[in-house]
Amino acid sequence: MKVPAYLFLAGVIILFICLFFMAVTTAIEVHTLGNRVEDALIASGWAGFSKLDFNELARRKEITSEQSRNITLDKIAARTVVEEYIRENLKLSGSNYPLSDSFIDEKSKPVNIQEITVFNPTDLPAVCSKGTEIRITTIHIVVQIPARIPYLDVIVYFEKHVDVDVATFYKN
Image (cartoon, rainbow, N blue to C red; front, side, top):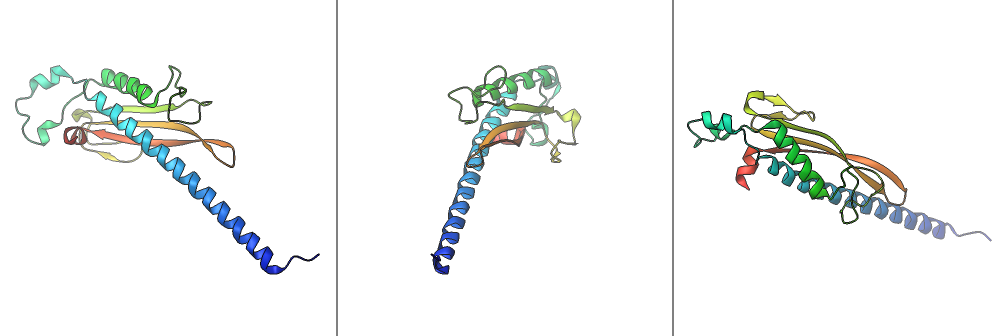
């Protein structure tokens, strides 16, 4: 029995539409995960701004202008706090695996904290690893998040870069 051409064409169109919507849902899911991770990293970066270098801060006389608001952070303490808050905000174990209550769905692979760099006024101007020019006190964070691509059953890592600077810290 021969299948009419219009039924074959309808089947191909329906298959194409299904594949298209599967790709769109996957893209939306990965984008949403990226946004949630970015929010968690920004909050973690803000926590790093609690670790001021008080010796350097005591030397300044004026902090009323936008330029002189460029604070100096204790690099080691800020990095430690940011790393702790990344684990807390992303709900990671001590070895960076997502815990059961984490919004990161892929629990079998660890989150890789690639970089936490504190740029103080003495380091400026600088360029972060992503190529962004840094002009004010900034904490640059890079993590790799595992994600399972539905329908393909493949685990991939996507990288998230976040720059948390003193200007956004003061605005929010």
